[in-house]
Length: 270
Image (tube, rainbow, N blue to C red):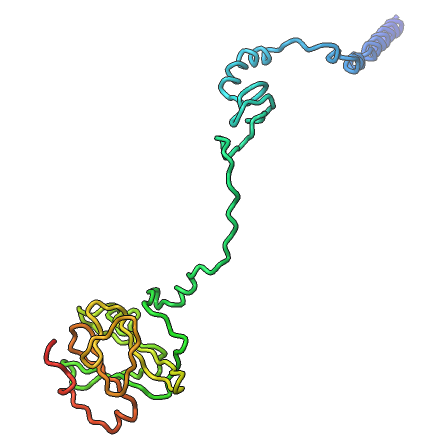
């Protein structure tokens, strides 16, 4: 009897297991969903129903177009009316530099002529423009010319070897002056000495020129005209303005055998 009951329970359990396998073997429905997914959706047949986002965008469309002209369909661009899409695209000319319609003249061609700036730079010293230009006949002298400077405050004269210079500038501006004058009545650029070649004789001689100074340049006690060269010779004396300093022109030969008395060279008036 017990054996029969065990066999019956075993058959029932086997049948239950088969039923469970049969249930698990049923279609899951995924293939049906895939088939539904691959079927035509009908989107091409007509527009989809409006969504919440579309309804919201439709309500705010008028405000967006009015707030940002030039976007979307018809609208005024930045430079004219147009029907195109995007910023300012349309029939009007974008970026027209002449809105009044006036015709502009031809563009000026570049000028390659000499501006004179390089010449001005060459005719300057320490950033200060000079009031004179070097003459084309300027040469270095063979004679060893010197300038002896006599002042009341000094017993011995100061000697300047000007034969080593192509030009000698006198003045109050120490930035450019080769021989400072240091007197209130003198100009910043008072006078200049150039060694010039004389074509007739082939000699190089010193010439002095006043640079349009305020109180004048005096050669041997006589005031010379500005902007004109005056030939200088041995023992000539230069004075500037109201200064008592005397600038005597000598060369190595004359200075070696000539005795100079400073008291006879200096004037009494300051």
